[in-house]
Image (cartoon, rainbow, N blue to C red):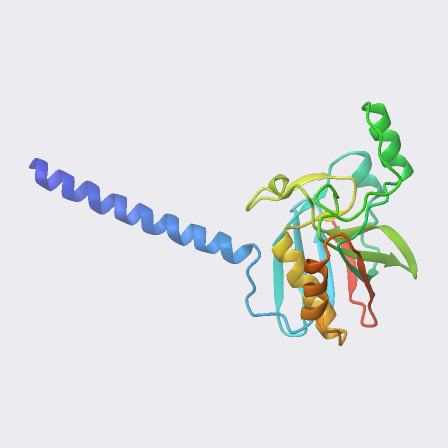
Length: 216
């Protein structure tokens, strides 16, 4: 086989491998944070703790998001697996009130957490939080943005939380916007106000409350 022929064959093989890799990346993208169709509403949310995925079910479509979930160990044992709750509130620019356990853990590590962290760049809840309740009682758990998106590994997620679910900002805004629209709210105006005043929380209690459930 001549040198020219060998180069041509090598080039063809590289092209085929590149094409196959492109297909694989496309399938992965379809799996994560890309809807099969746009959601017209949200009826149910399922949190896969081990898979680091949240699946949002609408009336005629579903969408899957890569997230950070509860780390294994003590935090996982406290997650309310298979209990059906609801998403009862959306907060834009949320403040953060650490639990007693969180403050105790910080103290053991030589740091001190304030009773309340106001909205802003240093807030671990980021820009959006969806609040959960069980049997009408507000829970400490929820699905929220984070000020450290880099800890949500692209394509894989991560298990690093104490029970809440952490999501990327674009994903959180998309889900929150869908919830607000199906609740009859002016979502665009609410987000515009939140962006204009990032240090001010905007809290919206939902009338239409989709169910939420943690799965292993």
